[in-house]
Image 1: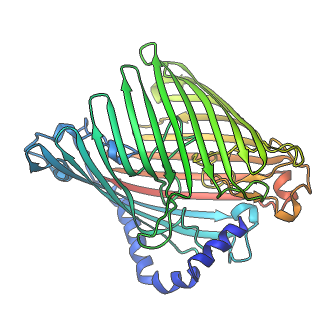
Image 2 (image 1 turned 45 degrees about the horizontal axis):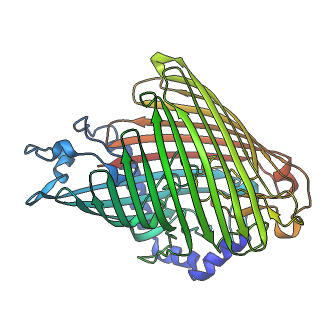
Image 3 (image 1 turned 120 degrees about the vertical axis):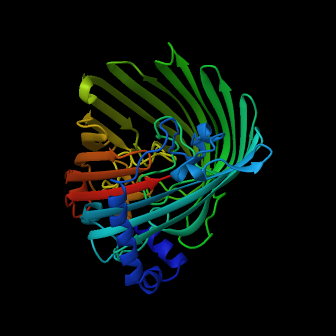
Length: 486
């Protein structure tokens, strides 16, 4: 982690000075004013027509009911503006302001370039897009993104914190009866976000550059894709791609009137950007797996297993990941759900056996939220949880993770697969495995289709492994987030 952060600062010049010179006190006041305004707006903006839908992937928004509507009101006026002859343009956007408080970043172990382990910060995200439909079969989608971080003097991590202006998505799409062909910058996600996601949690979302072909069936779909991760940089229109490659298929098949589902996938990942036990090299990794899930009335389940093979330098890859989640509805009136999840992901077993057993998370979502600086690789995880809808529009999740290393011959990695423990000079200095317990509370209040509030709190009780490899302080994380979408 230390080397990556230092490298980022060197590549971007004196990033700390740039922040001091450019993000003045006035801009901080403006951003704070926006945050407070959003809190107020959330309570007063009314909802639009119920059948219209704003999606996580904004190119999947469904406002077709407005196509022939001549009496549109409010933000609906920005949808389906006629360009003549069955051509339309629609506009949309998102403004998100998020206050965060951290006590003991990374268990209190940060690089020397950091000035504080206790920080308060404000994340700002503004995204606007245009969707141009040319007839029934062709469209162009474009989205601009602006993200910024305020009040935190530690070095920036551009892929997470700040991208001053980027062409986040820009693709052309050909739509036929059962086939879609999409080429360009685009967000993606599959399954339950454990392989590929748009990374909603961090301030800057993730996109991919390449080709996606979608085939639709009566009870399922099959996607073919050849893409490269877009590397988000800090400044204006300076993003990069084609550093690594992802080629694969992802299919979904539904059974029993869509009450049961089966995902299946095969992916090939190639990169020189990832390191294992601080060793760099060329990685050519194949991932295959299945995911079985249900949509039943009372008891539901999700089981997923993935296996990875291939080569990393002269090492043969032999890695796996298995997860299970079973839950039951206990208070139907309050939409109460109680569940239990377990996950095991392999870590390297022996540095001398010519094998690499570290499971590569590829582009998965952060499994343990924004507080925990670890991803779900080389991991044993047990997690009971409770979900409840105590009042209309309010959702609450309470969850506990009991976390441990799978192998004491491998370290822990961030959700982006950057090794953060132990230090390079102490790779095998301890056989401790217990990471600790993570207590998590997430709440969201969806005032209407446009406005939402969320409050999150996490407490990570550090175990023997963080203490043996550093300060091992307990982590406290608080977040208040307000989002407006149209």
